[in-house]
Length: 187
Image (cartoon, rainbow, N blue to C red):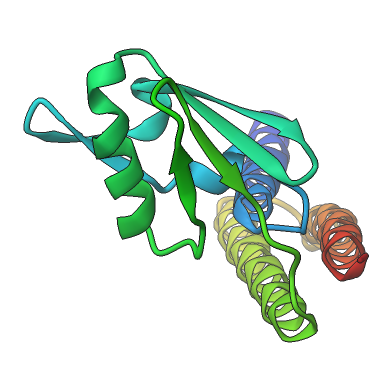
Protein backbone atom coordinates (compact mmCIF):
# COMPACT_ATOMS: atom_id res chain seq x y z
CA UNK A 1 0.00 0.00 0.00
CA UNK A 2 2.90 2.37 0.82
CA UNK A 3 4.37 1.80 -2.64
CA UNK A 4 1.11 2.92 -4.23
CA UNK A 5 1.06 6.04 -2.06
CA UNK A 6 4.67 6.86 -2.99
CA UNK A 7 3.84 6.28 -6.65
CA UNK A 8 0.88 8.69 -6.48
CA UNK A 9 2.95 11.37 -4.72
CA UNK A 10 5.85 10.99 -7.17
CA UNK A 11 3.50 11.07 -10.17
CA UNK A 12 1.86 14.21 -8.74
CA UNK A 13 5.23 15.99 -8.37
CA UNK A 14 6.31 14.89 -11.84
CA UNK A 15 3.10 16.10 -13.50
CA UNK A 16 3.30 19.44 -11.69
CA UNK A 17 6.95 19.85 -12.65
CA UNK A 18 5.94 19.21 -16.27
CA UNK A 19 3.31 21.96 -15.97
CA UNK A 20 6.04 24.32 -14.68
CA UNK A 21 8.35 23.47 -17.59
CA UNK A 22 5.52 24.08 -20.05
CA UNK A 23 4.74 27.43 -18.41
CA UNK A 24 8.41 28.39 -18.60
CA UNK A 25 8.50 27.67 -22.33
CA UNK A 26 5.26 29.64 -22.83
CA UNK A 27 6.64 32.63 -20.93
CA UNK A 28 9.88 32.62 -22.94
CA UNK A 29 7.83 33.12 -26.10
CA UNK A 30 6.22 36.26 -24.67
CA UNK A 31 8.30 39.24 -25.62
CA UNK A 32 9.53 41.34 -22.72
CA UNK A 33 11.15 44.28 -24.50
CA UNK A 34 14.49 42.55 -24.94
CA UNK A 35 15.49 40.70 -28.07
CA UNK A 36 15.38 36.93 -27.60
CA UNK A 37 15.87 34.15 -30.16
CA UNK A 38 12.75 32.49 -28.69
CA UNK A 39 10.70 35.34 -30.22
CA UNK A 40 11.09 33.61 -33.59
CA UNK A 41 10.23 30.11 -32.36
CA UNK A 42 6.83 30.18 -34.14
CA UNK A 43 8.33 31.17 -37.51
CA UNK A 44 8.00 28.56 -40.25
CA UNK A 45 10.13 28.80 -43.40
CA UNK A 46 9.32 27.18 -46.72
CA UNK A 47 12.37 25.00 -47.35
CA UNK A 48 12.36 22.68 -50.37
CA UNK A 49 8.56 22.76 -50.47
CA UNK A 50 8.00 21.97 -46.78
CA UNK A 51 7.33 24.31 -43.87
CA UNK A 52 10.29 24.02 -41.53
CA UNK A 53 10.92 25.71 -38.16
CA UNK A 54 13.35 28.60 -38.57
CA UNK A 55 15.72 27.06 -36.01
CA UNK A 56 16.37 24.17 -38.42
CA UNK A 57 17.46 26.37 -41.32
CA UNK A 58 19.31 29.20 -39.55
CA UNK A 59 21.15 30.29 -36.43
CA UNK A 60 19.34 32.97 -34.46
CA UNK A 61 21.21 35.17 -32.02
CA UNK A 62 20.54 38.32 -30.02
CA UNK A 63 23.43 40.64 -30.81
CA UNK A 64 22.21 43.15 -28.22
CA UNK A 65 19.04 43.95 -26.27
CA UNK A 66 17.25 45.34 -29.35
CA UNK A 67 18.64 43.33 -32.30
CA UNK A 68 18.24 39.77 -33.55
CA UNK A 69 20.47 38.32 -36.24
CA UNK A 70 19.33 35.37 -38.35
CA UNK A 71 22.20 33.61 -40.13
CA UNK A 72 20.82 31.07 -42.66
CA UNK A 73 22.71 27.84 -43.24
CA UNK A 74 22.21 28.41 -47.01
CA UNK A 75 22.20 31.89 -48.55
CA UNK A 76 19.58 30.80 -51.08
CA UNK A 77 16.83 30.77 -48.44
CA UNK A 78 17.23 34.32 -47.12
CA UNK A 79 14.10 35.49 -48.95
CA UNK A 80 12.12 32.48 -47.67
CA UNK A 81 13.17 33.32 -44.11
CA UNK A 82 12.12 36.96 -44.58
CA UNK A 83 8.76 35.78 -45.91
CA UNK A 84 8.35 33.37 -42.97
CA UNK A 85 9.02 36.14 -40.44
CA UNK A 86 6.50 38.40 -42.19
CA UNK A 87 3.86 35.62 -42.27
CA UNK A 88 4.37 34.88 -38.54
CA UNK A 89 2.69 38.24 -37.82
CA UNK A 90 5.13 39.20 -35.07
CA UNK A 91 5.19 42.90 -35.96
CA UNK A 92 8.87 42.68 -36.86
CA UNK A 93 10.56 44.22 -39.87
CA UNK A 94 13.41 41.98 -41.13
CA UNK A 95 16.25 43.59 -43.10
CA UNK A 96 18.27 41.50 -45.52
CA UNK A 97 21.93 42.46 -45.99
CA UNK A 98 22.65 39.67 -48.47
CA UNK A 99 24.30 37.34 -45.95
CA UNK A 100 22.04 37.49 -42.93
CA UNK A 101 18.80 39.02 -41.72
CA UNK A 102 18.87 41.72 -39.08
CA UNK A 103 15.74 42.43 -37.06
CA UNK A 104 15.54 45.56 -34.94
CA UNK A 105 13.11 45.07 -32.08
CA UNK A 106 11.02 48.21 -31.52
CA UNK A 107 10.37 49.45 -28.00
CA UNK A 108 7.08 48.27 -26.53
CA UNK A 109 4.23 50.72 -26.03
CA UNK A 110 2.45 50.86 -22.66
CA UNK A 111 -0.65 49.28 -24.23
CA UNK A 112 1.38 46.43 -25.73
CA UNK A 113 3.10 45.83 -22.38
CA UNK A 114 -0.31 45.48 -20.73
CA UNK A 115 -1.43 43.00 -23.42
CA UNK A 116 1.73 40.93 -22.93
CA UNK A 117 1.21 41.03 -19.17
CA UNK A 118 -2.32 39.65 -19.70
CA UNK A 119 -0.89 36.89 -21.88
CA UNK A 120 1.55 35.97 -19.11
CA UNK A 121 -1.27 35.89 -16.52
CA UNK A 122 -3.36 33.71 -18.84
CA UNK A 123 -0.46 31.27 -19.26
CA UNK A 124 -0.08 31.17 -15.47
CA UNK A 125 -3.78 30.50 -14.99
CA UNK A 126 -3.60 27.70 -17.56
CA UNK A 127 -0.72 26.16 -15.60
CA UNK A 128 -2.73 26.42 -12.36
CA UNK A 129 -5.63 24.61 -14.04
CA UNK A 130 -3.15 21.87 -14.92
CA UNK A 131 -2.08 21.68 -11.27
CA UNK A 132 -5.68 21.41 -10.11
CA UNK A 133 -6.39 18.65 -12.64
CA UNK A 134 -3.32 16.77 -11.45
CA UNK A 135 -4.42 17.19 -7.82
CA UNK A 136 -7.89 15.83 -8.68
CA UNK A 137 -6.44 12.80 -10.49
CA UNK A 138 -4.11 12.10 -7.57
CA UNK A 139 -6.91 12.42 -5.03
CA UNK A 140 -9.03 10.06 -7.14
CA UNK A 141 -6.17 7.54 -7.00
CA UNK A 142 -6.03 7.91 -3.21
CA UNK A 143 -9.79 7.34 -2.94
CA UNK A 144 -9.41 4.12 -4.92
CA UNK A 145 -6.73 3.04 -2.45
CA UNK A 146 -9.14 3.92 0.37
CA UNK A 147 -11.77 1.57 -1.04
CA UNK A 148 -9.02 -1.06 -1.41
CA UNK A 149 -8.19 -0.91 2.29
CA UNK A 150 -6.27 2.31 3.05
CA UNK A 151 -7.39 3.74 6.40
CA UNK A 152 -9.30 7.02 6.50
CA UNK A 153 -6.50 8.69 8.50
CA UNK A 154 -3.88 7.63 5.96
CA UNK A 155 -6.16 8.82 3.15
CA UNK A 156 -6.48 12.26 4.76
CA UNK A 157 -2.70 12.43 5.31
CA UNK A 158 -1.96 11.58 1.67
CA UNK A 159 -4.57 14.07 0.44
CA UNK A 160 -2.96 16.72 2.68
CA UNK A 161 0.45 15.87 1.17
CA UNK A 162 -1.01 16.25 -2.33
CA UNK A 163 -2.49 19.62 -1.35
CA UNK A 164 0.90 20.73 0.04
CA UNK A 165 2.59 19.78 -3.22
CA UNK A 166 -0.10 21.71 -5.13
CA UNK A 167 0.35 24.76 -2.89
CA UNK A 168 4.13 24.68 -3.40
CA UNK A 169 3.79 24.64 -7.19
CA UNK A 170 1.08 27.32 -7.11
CA UNK A 171 3.49 29.62 -5.25
CA UNK A 172 6.20 28.83 -7.83
CA UNK A 173 3.81 29.70 -10.68
CA UNK A 174 2.83 32.98 -9.01
CA UNK A 175 6.52 33.87 -8.57
CA UNK A 176 7.25 33.08 -12.24
CA UNK A 177 4.32 35.20 -13.43
CA UNK A 178 5.25 38.10 -11.13
CA UNK A 179 8.84 38.02 -12.41
CA UNK A 180 7.67 37.94 -16.04
CA UNK A 181 5.24 40.83 -15.47
CA UNK A 182 8.01 42.86 -13.85
CA UNK A 183 10.23 42.07 -16.84
CA UNK A 184 7.50 43.08 -19.30
CA UNK A 185 6.61 46.32 -17.53
CA UNK A 186 10.25 47.44 -17.11
CA UNK A 187 11.00 50.11 -19.70
